[in-house]
Image (cartoon, rainbow, N blue to C red; front, side, top):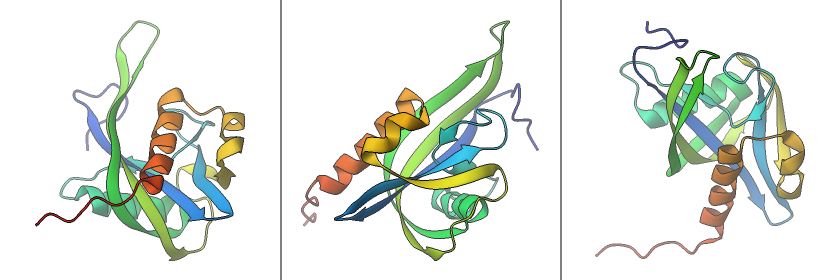
Length: 155
C-alpha cells in the first residue's frame, strides 16, 4: 500500500456533501477528523479510494465507515487538490479529491473509524466550524445545485 504521508504521487480521495434539504432543515453533515491530515478539524466525510474501487463505491464505503449512514451518491460537485507541505516545503500530503452530492438513505449516525464527531450543521452556523475556504465553497456550491432546476433530458 502506498504511503499517505510523503507520497510518491497524489492519492485519489472522495468526499460527500450530505445535505438534509427538507424545507425547514437546510443542514450539511460535518465530521471532525481524528487523523492527519487535518486532525481535529471539521470537514466533509470521505477518504481514499482503494485499488479496484469505483469512485461511487468508495463514497458509499467511506461514509458508512465514518458515519454509519448509507447514502445515495448523486452528482460530482467539485474536483480539487489538497496539498499540504512541511516546514521544508516538501509535499507531506497530496490528495486529488472528488466531492459528490449525496443523500442519506438510512443507517444510524455515529462517529466511527477516523472521525471523532459527526454533526448536522445549518447553513448559518457553518462559519463557527472553522472550515477551510475550499470546503465552505464546495458546500455552498452543493446548496446551489439543489436550488437549480433539473436540466432538460437529452433527446
